[in-house]
Amino acid sequence: MAAKSFIDVSPESDFPIQNLPYGVFKPEPASPPRPGVAIGDFVLDLSEISSAGLFSGPLLNGSDCFNQPTLNKFMAMGRPAWKEARATIQKLLSESEPTLRDNASLRQEALIPMSKVEMLVPMTIGDYTDFFSSKHHAKNCGLIFRGPENAINLNWYYIPIAYHGRASSVVISGTDIVRPRGQGPPTPNSPSPYFGPSRKLDFELEMAAVVGPGNELGKPIDVNNASDHIFGLVLMNDWSARDIQGWEYVPLGPFLGKSFGTTISPWIVTLDALEPFACGVPEQDPPPLPYLAEKTSKNYDIQLEVQLKPAGQEPCVVAKSNFNHLYWTVTQQLAHHTINGCNLRPGDLLGTGTISGPEPDSVGCLLEKTWNGQKPLSLNGTSRTFLEDGDEVIITGVCKGNGYNVGFGTCSGKILPSI
Image (cartoon, rainbow, N blue to C red; front, side):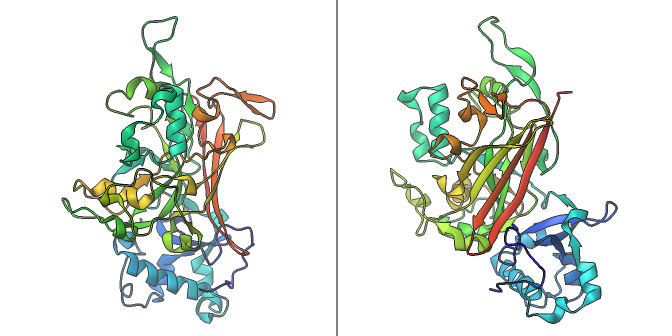
């Protein structure tokens, strides 16, 4: 692997040559969307690299996958094509390779300052599923709503629990979120549910796997081959209206309390870039059923942070967690999703669920942080139980390498008043 690029990249950058995450962008407002790769403070326009004939390997030569408005076609090509593309891009950007480095006109066309581009949702998301894979989060939610006798339901230890989300309201980082309206549960002073703007709006610190090649209807994906069906990971904030959710989710699960907005980061970090940060998983006890038993089970050491910025104030760190707290791995999640024959498709999004750790400062939502509003949070003199209008939530994630970072950029959104 090339250790250094001819492009000057700060050691603190999320996007060194060891990362090379994929996204979709517009260089100008009127430009058509096109795929790109982040390198330092620049975006490498893959449509220009492709048009110059620089993807000359056997799988990508002549392909129009980088002349598309989304990454779906490239993601559908599978891991061999991804590896070929990564090797080509790393070589082109390495300090010892003259092809792009010494071609001033191509550099001018293909390397665009990140500050000048508009980032878009990088794939067409046909379907979105949200899992519930953090044991610490599951336990805390159970303690809040059911008490210690039944904090975690028995099935949680056997099944990667999930619900089917709303793909149409998945938005790119920086998109404002309008406070949702809906029904909330009856209060002690009223026997009927109330209707109006959510009174318990929350964030959820999550990540999500982006599906590459899918599977045919009726043909499950083996858990030990599941990583070949995951293109990469993004940061995710699955905004939640806890009052609406709490009133509606029995017996069929989340609906309006979740479907109003889900924010993702614009850059998809590939599993190849994350491989140096692979780590073990928490002990799964009882052992998973055979179809979920992995020969090699891995998480990734991704340091996650949430900042909350009230309007007109400085941001304040409210959570520090890590991807390695997940009990169910993303490969187990994907395998379970298909075990009944469900067909996944390129671009599908599989959220992890809130990623909480064992310590009070590592919980990934305000529901846990304030114990459902019973313990207000202090933010530099400002008090919060749940999100207020004007609040901005900023999620970051980074892997710390030897002298470099592999990061995800930011996943942010600001709350606007209800319409």
